[in-house]
Length: 192
DNA sequence: GGAGCGATGTCCT
DNA sequence: GGACATCGCTCCG
Image: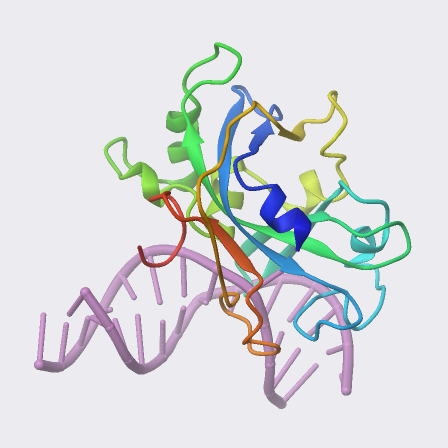
């Protein structure tokens, strides 16, 4: 939960493709371990969720509803399951002086050049599509390694007000306010 | 603009 | 066999 709040405002950067893709994280959800029935880590370690039980700062990607991927970061200390789901980013058009990130994201999403930027990565499935993330190419990557193709970076941005609500799309422990987002952002998923 | 629903793979019971 | 941390399309008002 501390991580889910703290990660807001940071940059999610991918250098896996032809152009760097960057977005500011505006929405995230916390999933705890043994005491959180909604968490993938709840039922214990399996081949699928093993990354959640490893050291913090690694990418956990899973496939859902037969069509979409969702991106997480492992959070708890080595041996304990827990993670944070990235739900939305504000796409940034240039990174390290290299422009074109938004056009690239639109292409990956199959969106037209005039589609609203707010629809590019406002939702966990959309976000993965916009970054070209699959379980195969991303699961297990180290976000904190400068040489990693997928990183979380702090560019000094100061976040404004953070709001907490129940998590989206979960049926178990549905009342817990573990979804966090930047109140001022128009790039969060769902309403606004 | 909102509710309903189908698509479709993988995991767990 | 059913549930699933989703999305976008269709139908209705």
